[in-house]
Image (cartoon, rainbow, N blue to C red; front, top):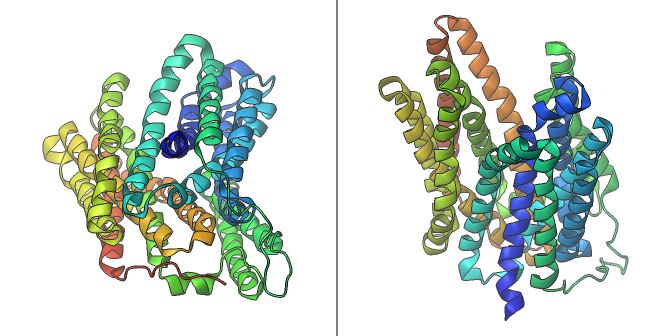
Length: 464
């Protein structure tokens, strides 16, 4: 059936759009500074608005999709992304551009969560792992192609030319979703016990979660007010998290049923997604610093070296999914974690004796391991959750990855800076030591979780 054949391409295209929207803006920031005659700090909000908003709203998108229809929310998300992209390309001021990017971030959260949630609706159970692997390929492709394609378009026609790609691709993905995805079977309001309608969301819990994530994300990314301000925001986020959990325990229809998550046994999988995201973002952020300072590579050579890891991820995503279907999600996630840890250890040990080749080899172990882990991890969580809760589960997985990336970008960079500053001179040795310390900590964390999280999640226990 033509519609069925287009379903997975529609989800893949949506995932690619969400990933590309984050990576393509990064290379455009210097051009935006020049065009709007603004400071780098203000221009960074073009990237931060997307990251912060997508992180904050991704979890509420899950239950919203479960209640109004996952296909419907995905289509709306792609339409909102497209309209915001048009506004961004034509933005007359930086303020308008930042607002448009924030809307894109919210839309990207809906797209990413619903693409993951719809897999079980459109793919036979025996092929779920392969579908998850394909979504992993889309994510890796978006992160890898964004800087390269964006940089090319930037040179040809400025930052607006680069952002045109964010108009074309969501339009294609929207068309594929309209044609390829089956209409939601249950778009009617769901009746709760006693006959009342479960159309409303957990507004107190959503509000508290939003405030908590905003405080945490600002503390991790902007470090407002220096160390004192960062600590204050972290304390606020801890207090907010405690209040959120209390609200969820007493809510009639909670945003996250914490006791239910414990019964399903997916909390270890979410923790693993958080930690592995920390390691992967540390490599993405710190490897360029090591190559530039530690080995003195020119930008073009550094770009070639850094392209190896995402290309390996793109090449291994589909085979990783096949391994999930053949050997099981739990096996794949654990083997993937071991490979990530091995890659991180290689990045500690090999750059010293092998130089740049050591960085390349470490990345070649790290990237396929992450693809295998993500396919197994997502499959384990999604198959442990009932069909009615796929949106919630997808939101949790995406939130764990996003918060892990935000945390890793701050904590691991902090470790790098602390160690390299302590060593001081020569700069190359300081950079190598800082990089090795960050990757070594990542390896210990991932190995610890791989050993401790031995129990597989239970399968599809209803919340009702």
